[in-house]
Length: 63
Image (tube, rainbow, N blue to C red; front, side, top):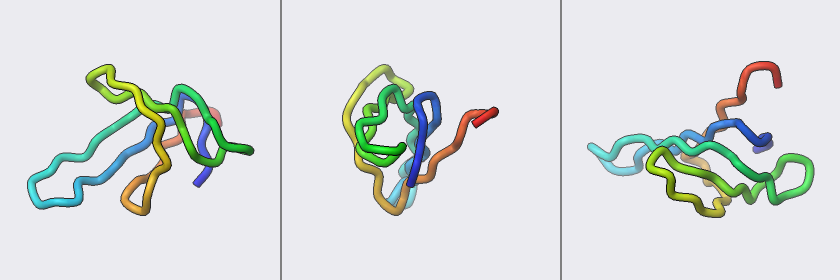
């Protein structure tokens, strides 16, 4: 998984009825776009994240 600042991480809900979560990458901490990433969720919460197999990257346009 490779990403850039501004890309979105979409984490699919793992339990029936659990909604997907979307976070914007605000800092790439790994080399060459690799995890971990500092992300900001829709509610403003920030955390450092190493995404698992239930997460996909949505690249911003133009990258």
